[in-house]
Length: 295
Ligand code: HEM
Ligand SMILES: CC(C)=CCC/C(C)=C/CC/C(C)=C/COP(=O)(O)OP(=O)(O)O
Image (tube, rainbow, N blue to C red; front, side):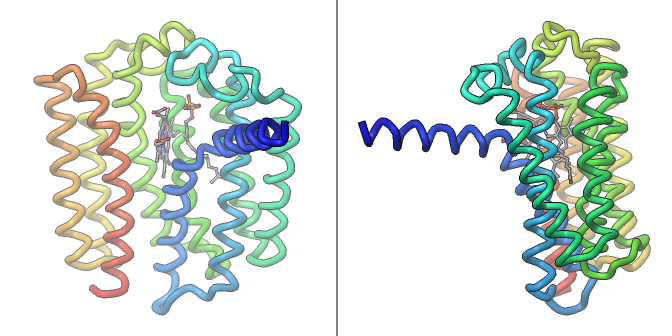
């Protein structure tokens, strides 16, 4: 009996963790950390670093839980998402709303009390951008949903910077532009692979509304644009050669995927490009960090 209770509790904690999209939030936090590091020539003071990461992480997790709540009916219709805690019934909508409200409020208070109000307000705007503007409206309304909604996911480098300086600056806005331009190839590669899922759920993603071939052209064009945007930190003197050489290599690989996807795709090219997109962004931000401290 005791064992059974313990098992139930463990399973339910895993459900709550899943609501927060932990791997997505981990990468968001890396971009926020780099935003913080680039704002100072030395290492970020721990009394800012810890509350900033905790606050941004909790509010991003809250936004992700709200996305699960709002999307529970469409998630139940897609093979990729039907095993999530709400579609399976392991968590009720009320529990998810309470959880999202609690961690979101704690996150906001941590940022407001221990970091600064600008960061708290900008993080709240990102939460609303993702959970309300993207999830409740754009996702169901237009194939440009992820392009516009991408701004919320792109914000963390700016949030990291404002956490340290209390001000908005052109450097972190450039990092926001990089994540913003990266988002369409990241998501559309997955959407090409999962086009049938989105069609079944009647979500107007680009491959559903404009076809797979047109989406592949858009992926290719955004990948070229990303290559250009990624050079800007070097051109304005924000980053050095370590970053430049590394990011050019990353973008050449990304471009090779986009080209293959358009011209000569295999069954898993879109899926492989989606998986590489995550490595691409992670390594890009690690390069920025390496360049800042050893470049
Ligand atoms: C509007 C913007 C975005 C959309 C629509 C989007 C969409 C998605 C989707 C649908 C998945 C799930 C793939 C699956 O179930 O296997 C995913 C995975 C992922 N995304 Fe995004 N994404 C966006 C922005 C971002 C941003 C800004 C980041 C990080 C900086 C990010 C990082 C990740 C990571 C790490 C994964 C893998 C998660 C895992 O393995 O569980 N995404 N994305
Ligand atoms: C406060 C702050 C920084 C907010 C961050 C916003 C955030 C968590 C962005 C994640 C982007 C993402 C995973 C979108 C996919 O949603 P989807 O509904 O298209 O994908 P799904 O079908 O997998 O749920």
